[in-house]
Length: 223
Length: 223
DNA sequence: TCCAAAGTATGAGATATCTCCTATTATTGT
DNA sequence: ACAATAATAGGAGATATCTCATACTTTGGA
Image (cartoon, rainbow over the protein chains, first blue to last red):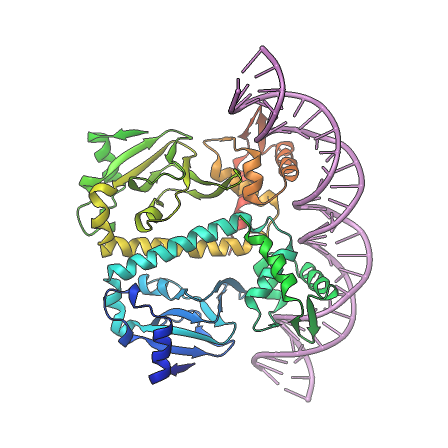
């Protein structure tokens, strides 16, 4: 992780201003953090020291079960908060957050801001709005997720996790996340290769026909 | 809908006190509303006049698409809020909420309380906690929903929607919600009857072996 | 360095689920 | 009261997906 300072910091503060989300001047407290692909923004089980707001890039949320199995739970994209559960909830078990590409976040230190933001109705209202929308969307997604064949859900997954045109998730994690057997995942992946959407390069896949994948993924988004 | 007054009202206020969720005395504002099965707590597209907090019973959330098709989106259970989106978000499209059984809600009038509760950090923090937990749970559910055969998901669904031991949802809505074909839904339902879990009575089904259904539904909840 | 564990890869048969088709009831508007 | 529409019901074959078995490769630690 690299903390961006001075002019560059100011550049991001201006480009993605979030001052309207707070009733007090927040800018002076904000740190701008830059991560490489696959870096951990938060380690599982460790309390974060910041409330994060993602402005560029994407990340994945992981949790480890008692039996040691690691599961991918969800994604984080631009304009998402990270660490809001820990901000509010003292006994929340922290999940791991790992970037999927180069990523830039605003990081608001708990040390100097926790009390302030927990008493800021403007912030709390915005956060509540954000969360209730998120819950609604997840509910809708949930109710229809199993309606589509793996082909569509996998296309969507590939687009969400690929960095540039390279897809390189672990099959085991993916079939767990998508709720599909290992065997079948491989089968559909090899179909994608046959059809020329992907090209296998050793252990990773390169996207050859983005448009085709986008069309398959679009199907999930109708209505 | 029936508004419960006097002693009975006080009984519910005491039994399910929510005063700790607010920093000001909320009790005097709370109305206690009682609904029969299948009543609408909120009509789709109409702004509610209350923030509801469900204390007994359960309900379903529906939305109508442009093409006229009606979809079940999610459930509401005890200790859930209803109308929080409308409280926060002026241009939120209101979804329909229909009870699944006899239901009792606290109803907090926007007219007298909206400003107060929108400026109450205690309330906002609690609501945020509630919503972020809900979003997390939905995300986890989503990622694994398609992992299980209809048998398990249907058992869960039946338990969530049955009133006492009577299940009587419309097949069309159910297969939409569960993302499964009409044909297959019927097939699994008739299997449940063969196995003696359910008994078909004209247009509805009566639960015969609750425990078996619970076991099937439990599978969804592991880990 | 070597072993155990995790991950990758593929075949073959078994199930779950879908699509298409065709009847038979409810429900609804006129 | 009647036609039109929506919902229920079930048969049959096609696909998607799962389970099991088996072999090879990479990886992390003793």
